[in-house]
Image 1 (tube, protein in one colour):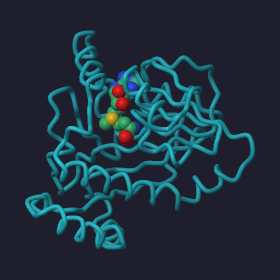
Image 2 (tube, protein in one colour):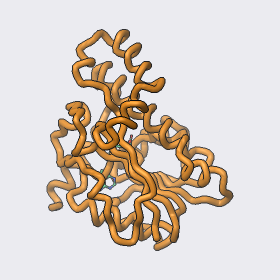
Image 3 (tube, rainbow, N blue to C red):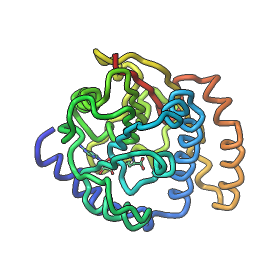
Length: 238
Ligand SMILES: C[S@@+](CC[C@H](N)C(=O)[O-])C[C@H]1O[C@@H](n2cnc3c(N)ncnc32)[C@H](O)[C@@H]1O
């Protein structure tokens, strides 16, 4: 990616203000967050890491900390290249320390530093995403775990809220995670909410989303294994 494109992405996120988005957008974004939080907290890999003592975690591209609850009780570094989002992170979660500003393609950490790296909704913005995945592999300990979430290019749901970006944004699919030195531990796709539902009044939309949250999304995810809007991938370093 050239420097100008990089700067455009950085500027976009420096000015990113979710509060100004329409209510239905915020509701749908929250829904992705809730579904994913559920998937991660219920995954055996995460449960094992959570229980283990002295685990060190990197939330890579943490934004303002939508997934802070997952890691707040663990030794976690929050990393993002938007200085303003990290500042917002500090204000929302009252966290003074453990935040580092930088580029995922050139991580300022020693090889073999982390037990777990979370990288949620970030790789789509990185043209050389394989390089970024390899950087994440480098900073993981042997047998360490990486959890990636991306917009799924094989999805049959095409929600423009998660696709229409004015900056570089390219959905990925499972085969993009076939990286030497990593093996695939698990994957699933999620978020099967038909885009048409967003025309409904938000009170009704919320009720319908609750049905998806309470189990319908999980069911559809099992039936249409690779076809959800988001792809969740767990890789283990060999
Ligand atoms: C869609 S937001 C996701 C934030 C958070 N992970 C979440 O899911 O709420 C994408 C985030 O990736 C960060 N980002 C994009 N490209 C990056 C890069 N090359 N290095 C570090 N962070 C990057 C942005 O600043 C932004 O915070």
